[in-house]
Image 1 (cartoon, rainbow, N blue to C red):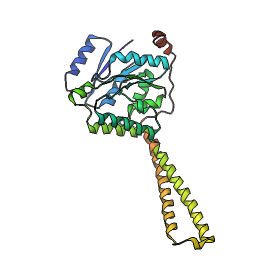
Image 2 (tube, rainbow, N blue to C red):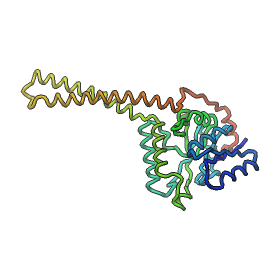
Image 3 (spheres, one colour):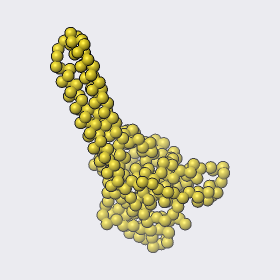
Image 4 (cartoon, rainbow, N blue to C red):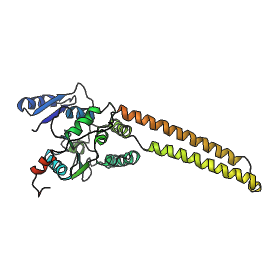
Length: 293
């Protein structure tokens, strides 16, 4: 059974009345009204939690996500067995070099820092297995980045290349996302990802400790057996002492941040395990003809 969930995130135009009218006219349409403007991710999560289907598709309202391409996402899921299929833009979505390049570079940076290779696919036009979508939505906290939460439940992630254009931004140069909101999204993505750079910092501190201790032993041996080779006394040992304790501090801070990262992951609702039922996937494969797959 198909259903359409429309979420009114405190819209200031005629959208609330329009989706109410649609809900009254069509039994498969549900209208949800947020108490105030909470933002894209909370509105998406609210909509998903009202779904009941085997698969969930999320779309923005600005027409950059063509509903006609939903079947392409479903075909890819049927062909590959993925739990999540993202739309992947073939070219610039906003036709704004700074904004598009900034988004690409930031995703690549967070991908490297977090070790989550799926970040490059993140897009609000996505097909998600219903059980995964609702499970991820149910654990999302106030600052959890939804797509990161999805990656906690599955690594079966794919994409479909398609032409996506934000016509509203291209034509009017106006966007619902100001710089402050974009930076907030970036911060939430980083905080939810549990950056592995913390471990790298701790490892650097440990290596610094070991390296300075080894150098101190070499200096001590030089002082005992080859004292004439030391031109100026005291400076090398002072520097090595500073490096050693700097490494100790870096290592201990790395441990503390790693522990804090675990607390953040637990607070954000990261699960210990999750089970998924894929036995109905054969129905989707049977729906599509072999030549389409």
